[in-house]
Structures are given as structure tokens and as C-alpha cells.
Length: 92
Image 1: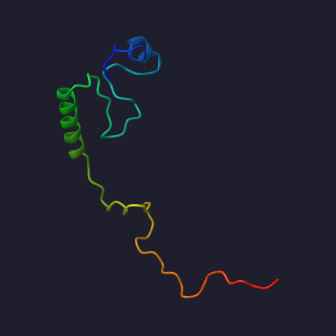
Image 2 (image 1 turned 90 degrees about the vertical axis):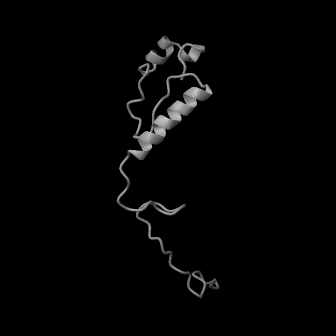
Image 3 (image 1 turned 30 degrees about the horizontal axis):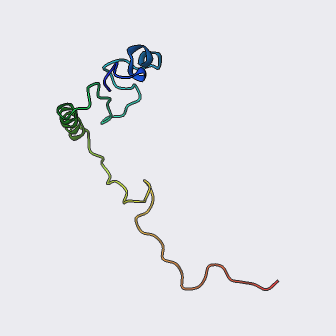
């Protein structure tokens, strides 16, 4: 985020909103960071390489990640539907 390139990136505007110039947000998780540099190829490549190194250094989860579309704790096997209909029509 280059500072001073627009009205929304002035030092005053950013500090009034809680940003500390040159620092990431306090709630940023590991592997998340603000880049305080221009959006040019050299800066993007440098920040990307730094972030890849930071991500590679993170501890790996001890349990495998859930399969796509599943949430943690859900069983990987789904019960098979029964041969009959779950809902049977009844006469009034």
C-alpha cells in the first residue's frame, strides 16, 4: 500500500483509522501481511517471495485438512441413503 498516492492513503487518513505505517494489522494471522510498497513487478516479486518463505516456515497441522466441501470434525464417509423413501405419503 503506497502511502500518499491518493486521498485514502495519506498518513493522516491511515493513522486516523488505526493503521501503523509499515506494520501489519494487529489481527493479521500468520501468513497475512500488508505490503507498504508500490505495486510494481519488483515489489510484488519481493513481497511474494517473503510471504512464501513465511508460509513455508509455519507449522503444519497435525491432522489432515478436511476434504473440499467438508468442515473440520465431519466424517469423511457419508451414510448411504436407504432403499426406501424416507418420507412416505399418507392419506388424510
